[in-house]
Length: 219
Image: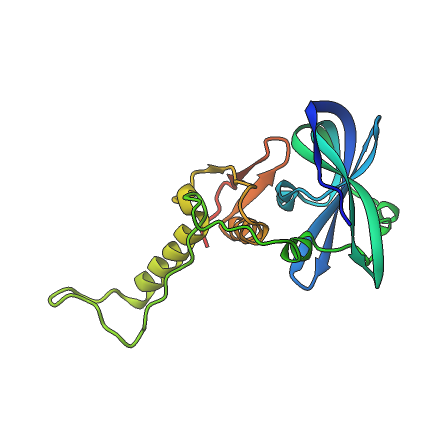
């Protein structure tokens, strides 16, 4: 049984260190993290952290609320105290040592699997949610009479642009700097991160946004 998260009277800001580990599971890579602060140590599984690389992040963290969480793991039940973040200001980033990485065991559960076992949230009415890519029957020629058919290369580019437009929604077309909306569903957020990497973007943890790398061509 999981207690209902109880919001603080107001968010609290504390200094701390967020240790983030990337684990490869059946859904692909996923991030789990622990936040050590003067008021305690907490597990953090916010979707925002899907964008971050493995490492140790020093800074100030805005904690919205703290709550206990129990869930099935390794044939039993696991209990942990979690913190829900409202934001963070990072001041330093270092690599994770092998010993620190080993503290996150193979029993770690993908947050996506956790969410799929929870009641589903309907996002169809959210205008900012990316729409599903439309499919067309390749056997039906809808090219107007007198208009040249697009070449294979241009058709491929148009198809890729259409898929990206559907994936990124209102963010498309992408600027040189992109800030993702972490309130969308976690699976879509992971797809957006993967696609940004393919398009030559890199995530700046301190700025909490993606930036197009110089001299990179879009994929």
